[in-house]
Length: 194
Image (cartoon, rainbow, N blue to C red; front, side, top):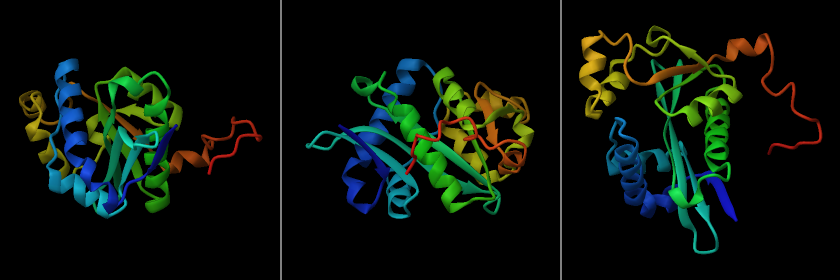
């Protein structure tokens, strides 16, 4: 059994394995990644702004994601999504991403939710959640967010293109679009999401 939950201070011992797993996955994929410090991830856990997945009675680390606000809380980014190799193919990434999305909506119901990704699987999950691909100009203009891209190997591309585009695809969920159609309208009424 794998449990997907909001991380807390009790999960801080997992921080190093989380960071190591994210970095190793980026190397295998040959993609860039915005690196985060141990302290940053610890802070996300203390603030209740991270999702962790733990497997079995031994509570083995299985996956992770965190949220962060930008632009005076007008935007929320879901970042750092990772699933340990041996737990892939079970829908765990989707479950983690869904819980991060729900946490973002609970904490910041009027904020736009966005992410940058090079992963096709993440793009598919985002689309199912109601995100749409957008130009970077529709994302936050918060300098602190874009500064986080500096540790990515693709940062020179981002800068050379005046932050208009890079290797990642920008995806955005706008809660105002819910007025057009609730993303849960087509889910069977016998399904309960807690």
